[in-house]
Length: 409
Image (cartoon, rainbow, N blue to C red; front, side):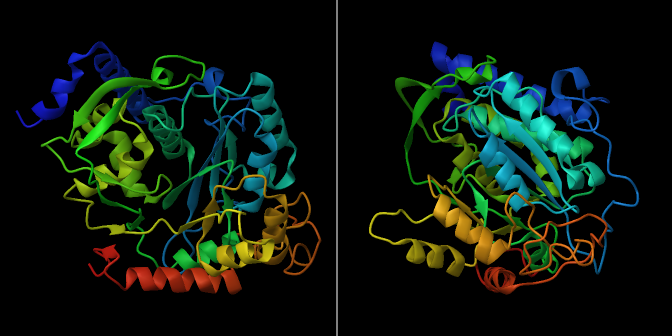
């Protein structure tokens, strides 16, 4: 059988446990799409702030089609003590066209999730446009294990259920931050084919992989990974790819992963159920082995790693980030001065306010102004700034070169 080279590894109790856990997880993820209702008692802190919230009113719904910007769905996740980081990231990346799903994992307490939901209820823009949702029950996960992939798929499934007709999914952690305004991002992606996936990937050169057991797939509290002394050989049924764990994925590809129409996504979810750093493999391998989707990739995640502080002053680190032309950066450590500089010079985000844009009501939140951005403007209008021109140049170069598979089709 084609799958024999990796199914054989399920002989050990640890591998079998992890594989069964992944099968249960894959069925759970698929149920979010196939079920007719997302239960409020399990996830929400009250309408409209649970993940089963209704869509924004017709007046606030973004217009779609030629001549209009795309719509992004954001899955923003954090853990214990990340309330400030998550809310700051939300405000920095906010735009009323988009959809946002916030998740604090099982390491955070019920109080932290309730506090996050209460904050979302208190912000006028979020209330007016109804596009920010909070998951009321945190998934147990370890970022190095397959539970991180399962949580991301669950978030994607919820966004498919409750969101408007969004075009791309962006998954961000609490230590990530945008390097462009949402106006810049929406403007830069307006001319990009909506089926393209910005996913850094390369063929995996390792012949053996460490086997782990991720108990987070089976329990409700965060747990450390357990490591097996065994090693897993490469499969012969499919080719492994790995890359950045933070791609920008098209809606079509997300639907393919969640609904698993040809069983490949489910098969790979089981395969990676006991693999270290599964988030660096799963989406890349699904993409590379899917005949329908493999030619819809740009080999870049439009993301930049934060330069380490050793040997670089603040100005040099800031210049490296901004000069990259990337849309997002991670992972920020204790970099308050660096984040503040991005807020002030790139995003023009006022203290404790959302990043302003063309959608702000006339006379509020304009570029260079410290005024709060008020609701009431045109959410279908975007304007391009200097950072947006750098991003557009980066994307244009990627789409026009061999980094893009299928861009000419």
